Length: 105
Image (cartoon, rainbow, N blue to C red; front, side, top):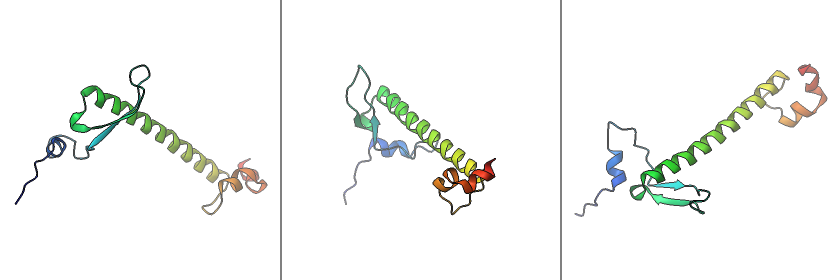
């Protein structure tokens, strides 16, 4: 029987005292103006600490964008409900027809 040697990432995932069970096999490192012209995907075990830092910055930017999108959708939903919209109404109906404009006043 052959036993496959565990990768560094697999060994890290087994650490019970760290929050690392969801570590990716690879990380995405975005391009850096003036330093690196292209995006890179790097095997986690080959990544430098700087690569990790840049990957974190990239993920944080994606999370911030997702939060802004979530906030916008939540605000739109709340405003639509305030205007009297129900679950079956479309955004266009609620915001651009006279039927709901009266409720909002």
